[in-house]
Length: 114
Length: 111
Image (cartoon, rainbow over all chains, first blue to last red; front, side, top):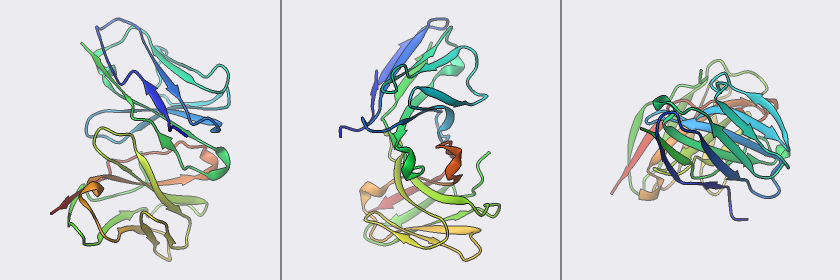
């Protein structure tokens, strides 16, 4: 068990560019979540998957955001046409559905949009 | 919006018990109380959760009032490594992990 892994740890991009983040959950976990966190605020829920199915998306997830979990293992979060307001920490978490909301979080990807 | 209210900050002396309060007066009968903490530059870490009985694990104790409208997280012997933001969250298990984080309590453990 190596924990939840996120890549990259830091990403700097120019406004208008596309970015993609990857999350590798704990191997036996069937649920995977994406959160976003800005400075001084708690994490905000974006979306979650059970296996490969995306079961819920927050209204925060505009049409510029897309998340996939193609084989029910790793997940990617893509942001198209980035804006300065997208600058934040993007956190991934995973859990096993039978043990309630005990989520295991990765260390996040810090996105800076210039 | 978060369903909990927590003080924005607290201090605690190293070696003493840290008691972090949380108000959740609108909690529903099927909602659990969860506590997570976030150390600077890391993702949140699960601490403990409970429904109505008090709970204890290797990290902390959770005391829930009989009416379930408030709870207290107790770190029995705080260390400098316990300095973090502590989040109290109420969640219905069937929400499938959509935890709503508030702003939490920033706990500073001082030598």
